[in-house]
Length: 332
Image 1 (spheres, one colour):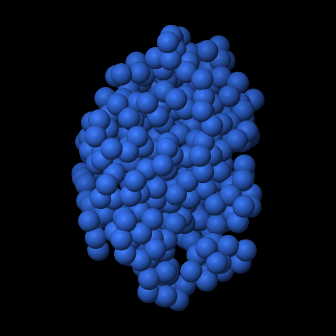
Image 2: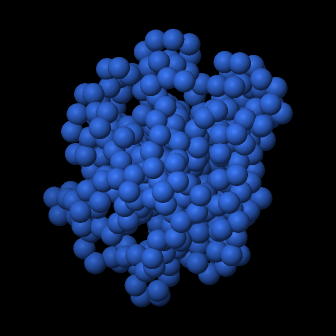
C-alpha cells in the first residue's frame, strides 16, 4: 500500500513478501565488548553458562541509511549477542557481518541469515519463510541448540485492518490467512514439531519478524494502545504457543501495559514516516524458545539514539526500521 512494502525471493525460490513492520522500542543495556580493544571478534568459544540471542531485521541490508554495514556491525559489537537471526539481509549482510566478526554464518540468496560466534554443526534446513541450523554452544559438553530465523508474509497487515479500517476480528483473521502468515506459521510449527519434542535435550529457538502482534500483547488492559480492541488471539503467536514455544520477551516482561516492547517502528511514528495518520506501534519481532535447559534471564527490545523518521533517516546511527530484540538465557 505504501513505499514501505517490498518483495524479495527467498533462498528456496519461493516469493516471500516482506514488510517494514514493527514498533518503537525500549532502550537496551550496553554490553562490554568481548574482543581486544572492543573488536567484537571472538577467540575460541568458551562454555556457555549464558546464551545471548538476538533478532534483527536489517531493512534492505542496511541500504536505507548511510554506512549501513558499519552501523550493523556496531550494534552487534556493542550488545554482544552470541547468535543472531537476521531478516532482510538482501543476500549479503549476514555474510559481510560474520566475515568482519570472524563468526560462522549462513546467508540466503535474498532474505534470511544466521550468524554465530559458536560453530555450526549441521547443514541449514528450511521451512516456509524460515531456516535453521544446529549450533554447538559448549565444546566441553557438546551442548547444541537449534536456531531458526523466520520472516513471515506482510500483506494484509492486521494492525492496519484494525486501526485504519476498524474490521471485525473474524475478518482480520481471514486476512491473516490471506497474508500467508497463518499457513507459514502452521508449516513451521509442523516442521519444528520433532525438534520441539526433543528440546529438553537440544533447545529450539525460533526468532524473527513475524509481521503480526501477539495475543499476549493485545489484551483488555492494553486496548487504549491498540485502537480500542481488547483481547485478540492473533493466529501466528497462538500457533507457536500451541506448538510448545514460549515468548521469551513476555516471560521476562509479563505486563504488556507496563513494558510494550514495541519493535515497529523507530522511524515510522506516522504512517508515511513523518507525515500521515499515527502508525500502529506493535511488537512484531520475537525470540521464542523451547527446552528446559534454557531459562530467561532478561529480554529487551532496543534502538540506538533517537532515530529520525522517514524520509530523513539516512544519517541515523540506528540502521533499520525495526527495533532489535535481545534475550539472555541461562543454560543449565
